[in-house]
Length: 359
Image (cartoon, rainbow, N blue to C red; front, top):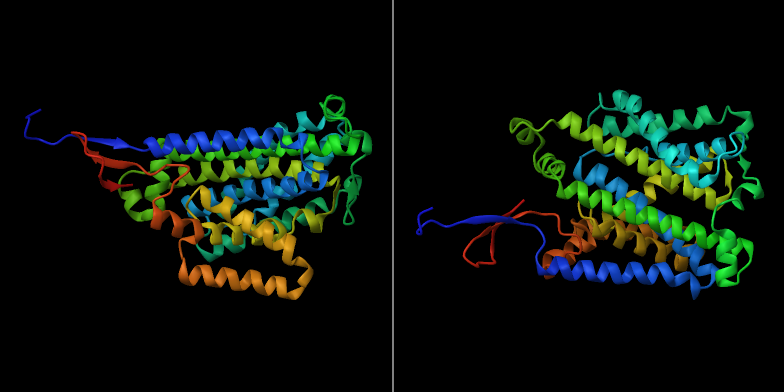
């Protein structure tokens, strides 16, 4: 190449990315050993926080990157919960072995569901996903062996059969209920880390480039040869599998399920959308920030009754008006902070560090 010509290269993670990786590794290490020091109440609160983070991350991948605005993700939360009960009660399968099976079954059932809802666009798609979730709720309410419309509870023998409980009791000198919570904590933490890793690796891959193109301009992406239907289908099925496994862990912890609770649009979709929007849709960090804010508000303001819901709504409106990219988006844009770098930067060669553009 002529010496007068400039060279370019694609850059995703620089020194800031390595610093972020070190911070994330330190936080993860601390989270792993936390049960040795934390109270049972804190462990239970963190279980709730972690599975809400994972659900928000799934919805963010679906809506923030693939453009699939779903209000029916409770379908797969409830599906995962009911499959756990079906596999462990009549089926007699160990709960830990059941969870990956639930992911596969959820993905398999997402395929025919997608064939129906993908025929719809925009608001019709959103309504269609909610209708599908209601169909799931009505179907599972008919299974008498799973409690019908009133629901059922897990046998204590099932919840106590999770591998590792006796080891945790001996190691940390705790009783069976506390040991069960610690195992659930580690399981939810592992699933959260797995969800984050899957989302991050997907966004760093060629499919991530396609998702970015779809998010920015779907028609232009199609014109460049991106198979939009296939990419969206892959994301929808992957999110269904992750959501199903999260739902299974939620109801393994709760040990009781009913159709209205398992397929609740408020608990498993509306709150998840709230967390993602206020944190920052279209970023990996945003849903996690939103989940922490939601957890703190629920913990310290829920006793105020209707005022709690009013404050949630007021915060959502405030963020949409003054920080439309979410709280993390606002901070990231202002200070250049990124914990999970996924945007590619076209950087001039010759030692220049200033990006010419990013995508």
